[in-house]
Length: 393
Ligand SMILES: [Zn+2]
Ligand SMILES: [Zn+2]
Image (cartoon, rainbow, N blue to C red; front, side, top):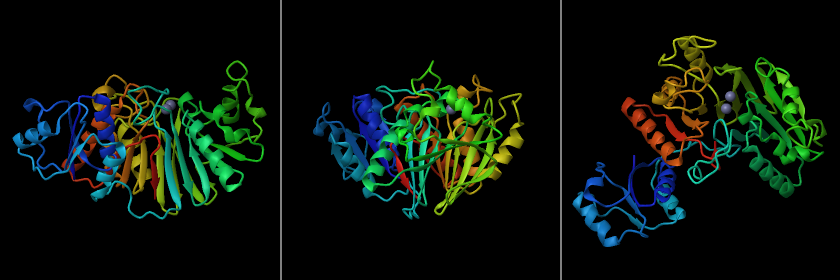
C-alpha cells in the first residue's frame, strides 16, 4: 500500500488528484493547508502532491520536516494529471486484474443511480446513469441504457466507421426504471438501418418489454417512435439462461421494487456480474423485506456470484443513510463489500452512485471500504466505477 499526501486549498483540485491516485490503489490523505494542526500522520509517505498555485516549495519542505516525513519522497509541485498518473503507475500496485488477454474489455459509460447529475461536483466519477459496455470475444454487449448509452453510441459509430463494419449489438436491460432506459432514444446506432440491435430482458422481470420501451418514445415524450427506428430493434424476453454470441449469460432476480434482474456473463477471460439495483439488507435493519428474507436473499446471491472476477454492484447508500431508505431497493455499501468478500469476488466496482454523492464523497467511501478490507484481511480489490474507465481482462 502506497501513501500520498495531497495539499491544496482548491477542493476540486484535491478531489481530482485524490481520485486519480485512488483509482491506482494508493491510500491518500488530503489536506487544505500546511498548518500544523492539519498534518496527517501516515506511517510512511511515498509521495506528496502539492498545488503550487497557493503554496511555496520552501513551505512544503519545512512542513514535511516538522511532521517527520522522509524528505526523500517525491515532491510534485502543481502537476498535471499526466504527471500524477505516471507517478502512480511507476509503483507496482495491482489495481486491475493481472491476466489481461485483450479479448475482453469492460468500459463504464454511466455509473450514477436514479437521475443524471451533471455539474462541478461530479466531473471525476461522472453524472450519467447506468450503462456499461462489455466487448467480449468479438461481441458487443451493453448492460442497461441509461443516459451513458448516448456517449457509447457515438463511440460505436466512430469505431464502425473506422472498421467499415456494421454493428451487431446485444443490449441487456436489468429493469425498465427510467435510469436504465432513458438513453435509448439517443442511441445513434439504432438509427442506422444496416445495424442489428437485439434488446434483451429477463422474462420474469421485464413483462411486455417491447411495449414499455415503446411507451417512452410515445409522441407525447419524444418525436420518433420506437417502431420508426431504422434498425428495427429486436426486443426479446428470455429465460434465465441465454447467449450473446459466444458469451453465456445467466439472469437472476435482485431485490428491488417492481423486480429487477442481475446478469452473470461468462467470457473467455472469466466472469462478470452486473447488479445495478439490489437491496441486500444483510445487517437486518429492515424488519420486513418485500420478497425474500435477508438470510435467504444473501445466501442465494453469494452462491450466484461465487468466484466472479468482476462484480459491479449497487452502492447507493452508506449504512447510516440506509436506515431511512429501507425498502427503496438499494444497498448499504458496508453490506455490499461483506457479500462480495464472502463470495470471493476478485474485483468489486461500487456502482449506481447516489445523485447526492459528490466526487469527494466517493473518494472517501473508497478509502473507507479499502480500510475495512485491510482490517478484515480481504484480498479483494475495491474501486468506485467511474465514467470513462476501461478495464482489459
Ligand atoms: Zn437504478
Ligand atoms: Zn430501479
